[in-house]
Amino acid sequence: MLKNKHILIIGARAGGYGEGIARAAVRGGATVFGTTLNPEDPREAEFFRDLGISLVEIPLRYDADKRAAVQERCQEIAQYLKARGVDTLHAVVHAVAGGFPRQPSVMKAVGDILRGKQTFSDMATPVRKNVYYVNAISFQDTIAGLQDVCGDQTQYVALTYRGELPYFISDTKRHLEHIASRLAREGKRTLVVALPEAWTQSSQFFTGIELAIVYNYLQMKGIAGEAPPDMRESFQRMESSLSELAGWSGVLDALSSYLHTEWATIAGSQDSACLWNMVHDLFARMRKDGTFPVLRKAVEIISEFVREGSGVILVREFLAGNKFNAGDVRQVFCHHFVTQREIPCAPPRPPRTAPSVIRRNWVEYDKEEIRQTLKMYGANFLFLDKVIMEAGGFRNGLMGFGKYTVPSPETNLILRDHFVGMPLFGGHLQMEAVAQLGTFMIMKLLKDRRLVPILTGTEFPDLNTMAPPGETLTFVGVMGFTNKRDLWLDAFIENRYARSKGVIRGMVLNERVVRKMTASFAADMAADDETALGGWEK
Image 1 (cartoon, one colour):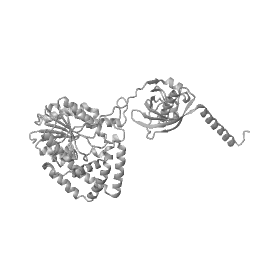
Image 2: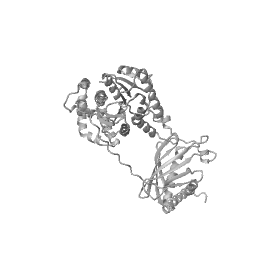
Image 3: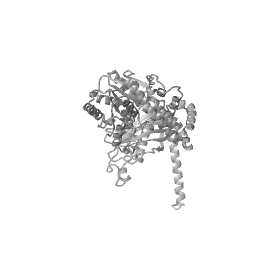
Image 4: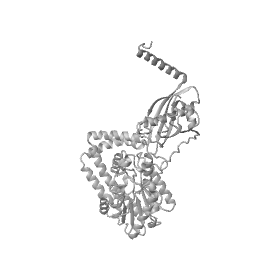
């Protein structure tokens, strides 16, 4: 059905959906090419050889910071295919997912991906950017780069996630669907396909993926019918392997009862923390009674069938059958493995609610204004150069920004004497700078009334970085109040290499109360001194 057709699969990795698609396309008579991150790896070459597909000898790695290079590499792949007799590709299958950096340098927060170019980005920001690129935006860059070997009827197929669990990757796939729809309006024959959950190198990071796979299996088992001829063998192989798995029958009965009562809660909750707690409690019990390894083995067996069956359906219905319109998002359900029902269009995603917009009026204060307001600190102990904060009165969510450039030890006695021979601005001094930001903000709100802010504590559990002279620190704080007395500042400290998040806590007291407190301390200290001297001075 695909004889004399050429198909390029990007992401045909062992144990992934791409592998199942490649196998089905080869069985359908297509000439299949595949890309990899490292074509020189002998294991990759052996994997492609066993699949019966041709390994493209040009490495392709998606990197959000190197989009131009990605398109250039795709253009090289197009010329590579032309040199091997490919005039026009029948289909390009984008089976890539993930984008999570796994290098040790990233995990230790020292990799280049963590370092901003002009302004700092914390670890989550570049990782999120790269995940969005790999899962969604790379689809359009791939299409743009392969145009020399594509035609008006070339199919551009990508995989999406339409499951019921609250995975953040679903947002990246929403963006992918948006990109595919736009490209379809521009004349490209794009198709996005949602496949049932299976265990892959990417999905293994998803909490509760095992339960989703077993739930789909139970749904499939509950449908009366016989698997289509092109999936009958793999279905019987799965059932045979599960029947031979010791302990699976008992685990399936227990999970069937659990999912019957709990799945609605699991699937209906968009709270990842709630999902994690439920899954953690269940898996803890299963590990305790020794049944968790049985579940994991069963998940691998079911996933192998799901990946293979997904490839068969995608090739039969879309690559060969051409049963779609440009821009479609089609959803394959588990019952399609044991029936021959038409693959429907996925329902529209629920609209996103627009976030409420707060109109903020900003006021900027220079070093001199800060010095006059915080004169109690003294010149050498003042760690703010500039403050920008919202105008207005007391309200929760009031924001402020501060900036401080670490001076040289020659110009600041604190640094010169604090760490002898090592003039670094330590974490405790950085916390003091954030506390000064909070103090400045509250004093501007008090407007010289007879009220005094009192610092009661700081919490920055991960603040372990030191800033050298010349480093500019940025402080951001969001203030909250309880009865206009107890207050806190949710804040973070940021430089070029690190961001630390914490909270500053304090109180606002009447000046008269503060004077009474300090007077009481003074009296106690005088009494202690007299007791210690034992009347000797008299």
